[in-house]
Length: 218
Image (cartoon, rainbow, N blue to C red; front, side, top):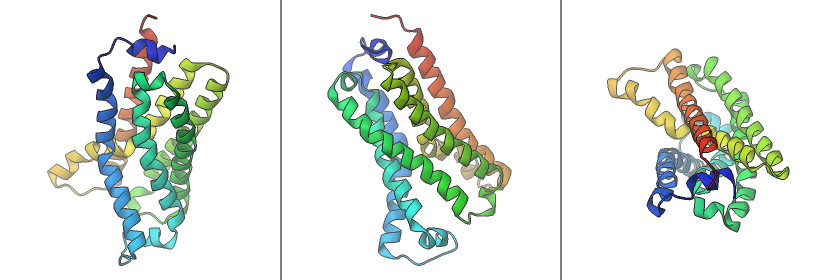
């Protein structure tokens, strides 16, 4: 039994499902927004200054959304201990690896390719490149770890990758202070809101990994 499973063995069924349910809820706004964007492209919506770059080069956007949605939703259930001890975990994991890599690398692709608004250039673009590259590297390291039979490191790398992949969900909340105040975003505010979403997830991931490792084996 892996360290993650040992840490969660004593959890009640309700508690076991609390984390995936919260992660699915966290994914709700990005999932809806992504589905809307794909529908907009499929229906041939009017081209505006906001969406012109997507119509000009739809492939990376569609690949990103089609990969990111199941990655976030399916990945949430990797945290259910009962499922981790079954074949389902391995089968779904083989799907999550290419989905996660596609989401990460298309994020980098769009950052480099698209003519984005001014507030998303400079530091915001740099953060996106770092996050996309880091997510891809973490997934590869997770795969290499499990091939060596190192389940603890595999779990840690995959948790880190998933945390970065869930950045869009947390960014809904990090943007809220400016939205509620009715303030207009400038580049520093945008950088702070975007960076904070990924930073919060990274901190929570490290906390979860450390907590997992401190649990005594059962």
